[in-house]
Image 1 (cartoon, rainbow, N blue to C red):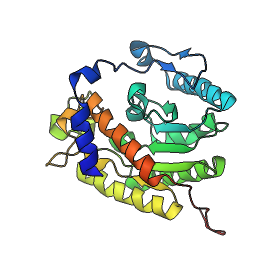
Image 2: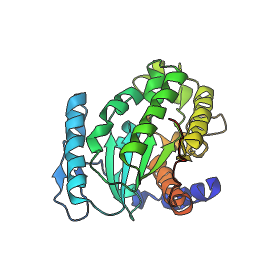
Image 3: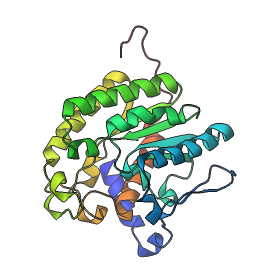
Length: 263
């Protein structure tokens, strides 16, 4: 799958393609009225609660209108800034990402989209925990609780845990570079192995994006990032291709959890 996705990225990275990409400003589920959200500059000034209130409003639209083939992105700024134009077109998408989100913060706000009826929930969380000094054990346990909640609240949805992405290491220019550099990419790889093992035990899917984004040194490839942490349009094209291919190959009706299986 790695070679196929990278080939697709090479074919799609023409500059003309990027002329259509803009920052996400609207939610549009099927033929629902477009709900204007604050522009890029204003978004950076929002408080955490203001973010949650916006996502609650967007989730309410999805819950009320029940668009078919609903997929939900859950996570931090990497999910948040996924350009709508690059998301696979055969689904309706609800983006529930918040900039700077942690696994603990996400766990506490999952109820916001309780009433939605998604087919698939794509989860990516953990990099901000690492930056803030959270232990691997706490991150894994928080993600276990997130999975438990999603399985109980959305029993018909397929849950896909996505690996934490690498960062740009010494090439990073992100404003929190000093904190970022305290987290080795080798540690992220090992943490991803734990997340993959846990996903298998919980009966949920695991999408390993990590190798798609690394260079020979094991760091985030320069062409896939804007600052060593966040993704460039090229990076989102790779992610989109992975979502598309993975959905077509792996997302079949999920198994029922065995009777007596414990959380």
